[in-house]
Length: 261
Image (tube, rainbow, N blue to C red):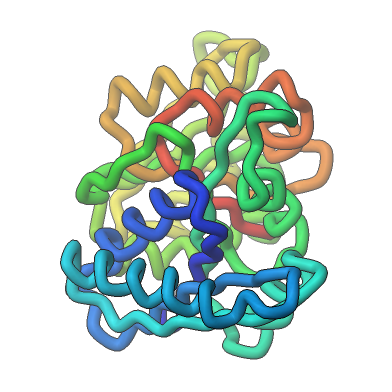
């Protein structure tokens, strides 16, 4: 990774995401971390700039990371962030999320899932209770359907090469019984070959509640990062689109990395 963007609106969720980001990138030389703030009223440049400089000072005391500050006026936060990410060819955007109701959501929190939908680059979502831990276990969720075309192997391998964690691949399907079908065995073999350099371990859970299964598995295996691939009307939809299943990120302390196939 070379360019990572962290949007900041000075809410606790965005500040927590910024703290997580510098700890995540600590010691990874050559990475440029951009702290990005958009204000919507004229005359706020000086005040916002001062607050961002203070934040940069605080963050550099936590970890050694090259930090760049960008403060700009704009009426549309998502449009400005999208433009920045494309212009700088961002490898990753790290955003906080908070609020279990519309009233409780901050500006950043309510826009995080919108940014995921833009399909610009992977978005690392930092839940409200998340604190940084060394990434030793990474979980990839998969529906095991046409994995060669639906699995973004290049960005996933970047993460695995960077942190060298134990790599877990999991599928949750209520139709699983004693043995896997030939179709599942075939897709498993393709994933095994795809990630052969990272010794993936496979898990097939015959359960109905996808997000609860993932959450419990993450606790049992001490997972520090969950990777979810955005596929319309599939696992991503179950995890993010339907409000009652957002508990995976709203109630979990494990960051979720959203990627696109």
